[in-house]
Image (cartoon, rainbow, N blue to C red):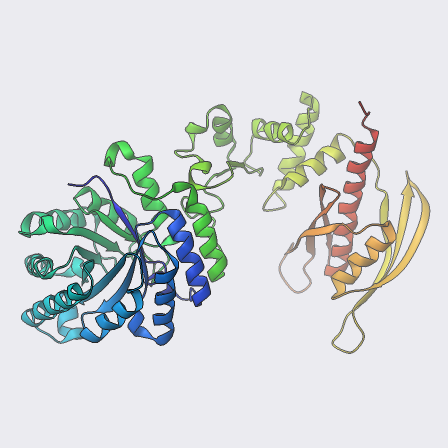
Length: 517
C-alpha cells in the first residue's frame, strides 16, 4: 500500500456551496493558482452542468494551472459527463468525477430507483467517463449510511468499468471514527479489485468529526482525502485541509504517511480564501486562527519563554505564520510582561517592573486586548512620566445630510507644566464628524498622524451609556495608543486622539534627549 496521501481540494466546489462563500470567476482562478502553490494534488473546480457561469469558471481554472489535476463534478448522467469533459478537456491533467447515491434512504426517496438500477447507472456513467478521460473518480453518495455489502458491490462494478479512484463519502457527517475506519478496511478487503483503484474519503462536519473520520479512514487504507480550506462547505462544512495535513505532519511517527502540501503555504492560502469570500478566520480555528499561536495565561507564557515545546506542538513558521504571539492580558504573569518590555527595548528594575505590571493588570480588566503600544504608554506614564502637552478646552461639531459638509471647531490648550502657555483655535471640514475633528486637531498641532485603529466600546448598556474610544496613530515610524471616555462619542473621540498625541509627544521627547554617538 502506498505511503502517499493525495490531497483533493474541493474549496472551489463544495466549499463555494457554503452560504456567503460565492466567488466570481477571477476570484476562483486566483484561488486555484494559490492551491497549486500550496501543493494539493487535485482541485475540484466546480459543477459545470449547474450553470453557464460554473462551466466557464471550471474551464478557466483548467486552463490556468499546469501541475495539478483539475476535476469536474458530474451527476451519473451522460449529458452531465459530456458537459464536464468539455469544461476540463484543456487541462494538463483532467479528471472526471461522477457520483450517485447508494444509501437506502437516498435511493428510495431521492432517486426512486432500485439497487439494480443504481448499479446499472453507476457502471454506465463510469464507462462513459472512462471513454473520454482515463482519470475517473466515482463517489457513492451517502456511503456511510449505505449497506456495506451493496456498497462493496458498487465499488467492484465501477472499478471494473474504469474508475481509478473510488470515493466513500460521509455525506451527512453521520459516521463515527471507529466505524468509518472499519468501513474503509472492510471495502478494501471485500472488493476483489480494490487494488486497482485509490480509495478516497469525503467527510462532512455535522457532528464535528470530519477530520477525525478522515484520519481514521487514512489509517485504514484510504489514500485520498477530500478537504477544503478552513473546512468551509455545506451545513457545518467539510474536513479542514490544514488540520488534516498538520495532523499527518505533526504525528508523522504515528501515521508514517506523506503528502505533497507545502505546509508553509497553509496560512497564506486560508488568508487568501478569507479575503476573497469576505469572512474572517475564526479566532479559535485550529492551525490558522488568530489565537492558534497566542498565549495569555501566565503559566503558559512562562513555559513558552523557557521552551516553546511546552505549549506548542508545531511552530507558527511551519504553517506560514510569522511567530508566536504573547498576548498581554489579565492572565499574564510578570515574566511575560518583562519579556514584552525587553522586546520593546525597555530595561526596568524590579520596582519599575512591579509598577508597570500592576498597571497592565488594571488596564487588562478594562479592555479586551492590551497592545504593545498600550504597554509602552504605561511605561512612559508610570516610569518616565511627563505632563501632557495638549488639553481639550472646548469643541463643537456639525454633521447632517444637507449641503453643508461636516465640520468641527475646537479650542486646544498648549501646556507648559501646569500652566497654559498658549490657546489655539481652529475649524476644519471633513468627510464625517470624526474626520473633521481629527483634521482640526492635526492642524493645531502642526502634523497629521496616520490613524491605524478607531474603536468604540460602550462602558455600560443603554442609550445613555458612556463610550470609550480607542485610537492608534502613527507618525514618523512611531505608534501611540490613546483612549477617551465620555457620554458623547465625539468628545470621547477627540479626547482619545489628543491622548494619543500626548503619548506620541513623550516618545518624541525621549528620542530627542537620547545622546548621539
